[in-house]
Length: 607
Image 1 (cartoon, one colour):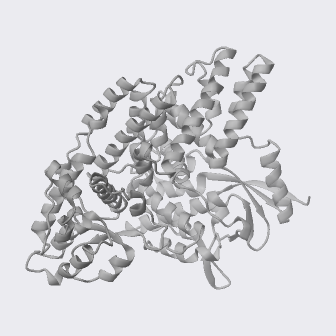
Image 2 (cartoon, rainbow, N blue to C red):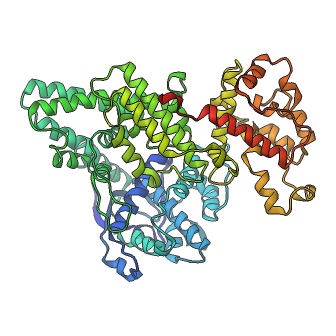
Image 3 (cartoon, one colour):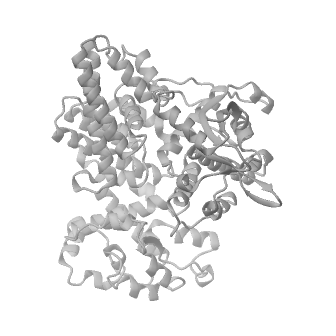
């Protein structure tokens, strides 16, 4: 092996005016929303620990540093990243978000742009230089929408993670402290840069660090600690086998699956405290578990009841059982099953704290049947929680809601079924959810778009199910097909055609975007209708190419459809056909949706 150099480097030192390449066999950017959430939460929490109101920017020089781990490179005109591209790519997305936000505020921070892209031989290019990402990165940098249809997995993930950052970046970091945060991110976030002369040597370093135990994970260190406290050799060997088998299964689903599970499990069952949402607050149980959870278990062994050898043996048996429950939940999140449909629904809108809440009420002694019932009850509450918040323009993103979720977690922790129902019923009442108030002005915008699609898909599937038709929620939400469903505006976007009814363009936009004026249609149909007026659209709506909710705007939906008509009659629903569609009709369709909301999102499951 030739010369190897290692040195601490700030993010600014690593990225400013420096090009990096990623070899073809390492180009996939794979991070998911949960990884971005953890990164943003860790960075923002660390920054807020040092920030004080009215600090001058110069004060950031005395703030504490944050260590991001190592990055392994080969030297050359464009350094090849052997290990670290997921973090580098994600931090670049964060820098682009900060840059866009500063520009929208009329501010600038030249260093950030130099960390994103730079000029070489008269040509500007991104510092992480991958050609297939360029168009997507251009759109993100200029804060424009980007269509990921027909794009590769890396590009889709990059764009989705950027939109995640837009929604989850904490409001606790206000515009007034944004430049302070940018300074801290650039100057106080450190890596250990390891540079090898050749790519072969760089790979040797990477393998040595990861395969020879020089960089043990928290899972490995937790296993070592727990096993070291078991006195009997045969028991220790058996427990080691159990641990290894479960970790292999967890990693087969996700290379970080073991760590993700352990964090969720420890938070669900053992964390008693959480960091306050104010500058200068210190990390507590919940926050520490998100990092070095092995150290937290060791330090808090009494809190976990770990006193004798048998307690550590039981800990591994619990690890085994709850790992199985965790994998069952993950399966329910990705594959629709009637038995666990609410778990699936919640995952489709990226509610990433679901696993923690679902694990909370489960007891080690519970049977599979009891576990499933508890999961369904809790998932049903999460479903209502999501809808109650988003229809009132309140975020359900990680940083916004983690404290609330933590307190619900503690409230329902290790409860029997009867107690769980009682507590969830009270939590539901505490939400004070009123569909009448929430839906009157609920409209399509950049925040509500994904939720409105989810809501319409749920409503349509509910109507189908109650009318004797197989519910089609999965298809309505599937964006990976050639002809996915999209949100359709019933009223075409031409204010000049409707001046008699709407007072001005803003009034027209408000009514046109209200949920009562929206449908779900196949992309191809949506495109073909384009600028058509309602009377022309109606023929397409009623052509059996969409769904019953869309078809219900016309007379045909009510003819020779006894089960649909019975569903309407039994529930007193105000379905009707419309020859014309304006303000009055939008208001009536909104009233209909309120009626359907009361049937779908209520507390009946807890009673």
